[in-house]
Amino acid sequence: KAGVTQTPRYLIKTRGQQVTLSCSPISGHRSVSWYQQTPGQGLQFLFEYFSETQRNKGNFPGRFSGRQFSNSRSEMNVSTLELGDSALYLCASSFTGFSEDTQYFGPGTRLTVL
Amino acid sequence: GDSVTQMEGPVTLSEEAFLTINCTYTATGYPSLFWYVQYPGEGLQLLLKATKADDKGSNKGFEATYRKETTSFHLEKGSVQVSDSAVYFCALTTTGANNLFFGTGTRLTVIP
Image (tube, rainbow over all chains, first blue to last red):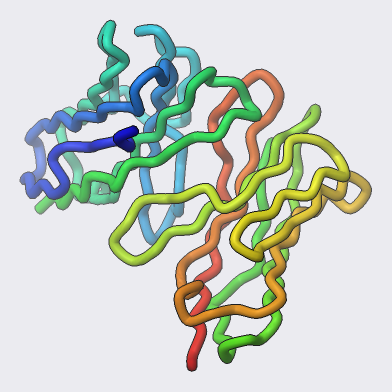
């Protein structure tokens, strides 16, 4: 079974631009979560989608948004990029979305904002 | 709020040494506890998990026991290998939500 895939793997943008990242979960998984990883703040939860609905949201500004499609694929959008948005963005999927369920992570998208 | 406190690194060990990485947590309700590992240039992989008190998670020689009385989930391995060199993250989810709260990570380097 294929794992979680994320595209693109690397992105370079300039301040003020917007960016869209894509995540394809493991087949059959309905929950998709997004995390930001930075050297200073570590791993932080952005949001979670289940059956096309946002169920949970972390403490990030409204510039960060996402959506999920009927095939469970998810996209994350960041508008008006800031230098501090440079990070590794990780997507994770799980089958049930329950708290005890294992989340499987993709390789991440490395975003650099210049 | 919910949080995870993890032993600061980096940790450097010789091959076949015993490993312990400490992890304590603060959470409401009954959290599920996880250890994830991140190899260079890769995403996170689940190493093991425990979903209720006194459960022991184990995988690839690593073990951790969910201790409610001490709010701890320490990671141990009896004999580390060079291939175990990676960053290890302790994490939790709380009842009713699956967003992971992560510790700061501990970088382990095993030298031959």
